[in-house]
Amino acid sequence: MSSSQLSSEQIAQLTDADWRERLDDDAYHVLRQKGTERPFTGMYTDNKDEGIYRCKGCGAKLFTSDNKFDSGCGWPSFDKTIDESAVEEHLDTSHGMRRVEVTCRNCGGHLGHVFPDGPQQTTGMRYCINSVAIDLDKQ
Image (cartoon, rainbow, N blue to C red):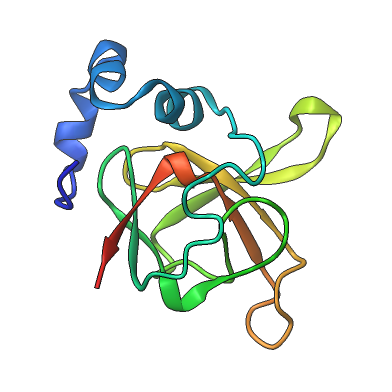
């Protein structure tokens, strides 16, 4: 996928069939069906490359490598988003749990969850994100 971001007008015109064509099966399952990848299997979990992480669905900028940290949880973790408008947060009570879901503000794709157990020396937050939901633009 190109690093260019889809506009809200382009996203509004995408059908479910368009999303299925645009995304591989794993990315579709996570981004459009609120699935998850198995822990410690994602390509960005242990990645140390510098750059900007973008939504795989629409190309929106979400996180920077400067805010990535090793949480040991099995998914890429970030202590904050690239800016306050990058994601939306929603209460998620699925699977008998009470969590905060994180979605791309631009396309609504499910990214993962955020927890208040991140590094205390920074924000104290841990954005636990599925690797299949993001792409890295290396710097």
